[in-house]
Image (cartoon, rainbow, N blue to C red):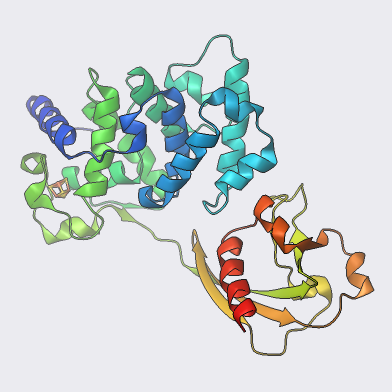
Amino acid sequence: MEILPQSAFALLRKQLSQWYRCARRPLPWRLVPGVYATVVSEIMAQQTRIATMLPYYENWMRRFPDFEALAAADEAEVLRHWEGLGYYSRARNLHRLSKAYVALAEKPRTSQEWESLPGIGPYTAAAIASIAFGHPSAVVDGNVVRVLARLMGEEREFASNGEAVKFFRPPADELLDRENPGAHNQAMMELGALLCLPKKPRCAECPVAAFCKSAGKPEAEALPRIVRRVVEKMEVNRVLHLENGAILLHRIAADAKRLAGQYELPEPKLLGLQPREKPLAVRTRSITHHRIVERIYRHDGPFPVKWTKQPGLALVPLEKLESLTLSGPHRRWLGEILGRTRQN
Ligand code: SF4
């Protein structure tokens, strides 16, 4: 697959690297780099926007400054520091990875060695190996796919993100600056994040516009062509039961596939209730291709005996909420609703 005439590669890499040196954002893992900082930032940045993850990253690095500190922490504390970022398997994997890393006599360096550790896929392995060790592995994420699709003017339709990543891996390898793979990979991702935007790419400011088949063309916005998953709508009802300064919460089973061990407001069916009145609050959120509408109903009666038989249900004193890991945006919701309830 030929992305460009060979003669253009060196110039493209040079222009990209000069632009990156001046334009890159001063992110904390770039200002204080290191293997652990690279690993944490790469895993945290998956499925999360940089602006959202920044305060979590700072907080995480204060509490777990290195692999050893993270490996020694207990899982409940690790999850509590991840709360609000979603996709908790990333926190569990990072914890398992730290334990495995600390136990290794020979530390991994290449992308193949990193891929053998828990929770590390090809993208993360290539990012860590190239950025922290200068190993020549090309990174192909959503930003890089977009830049390459436009540079190459690639019009074919991909059935999924995974298929697009696979297709663009060879050209990404071909384009990789083997002298400076870490900076090159970051420059490609930064170009996608700052200039080669999904909508309205800023071609007039782009350092590689001279090599790009889509530069300045309205069709650029349509690339890459990836079949979008249909958004599925879901509805979830929840119950807010307060009693003597405590709140009724449901602890998700430890062996559940998702959100294991986390607390949330129980669903009415768990309590044998049928919501009939107007909800106290309605909240909407999106997770991958699901759009979820959550309705929170207030229950004012006493705590029935049958609830004590339901596994995972507990009345938790409000002052203990801080020490629990709540699922999804529950902490924000409860802050809003309880603040409002107290004022009423
Ligand atoms: S010229 Fe435009 S479309 Fe091409 S890589 Fe740059 S920003 Fe993207």
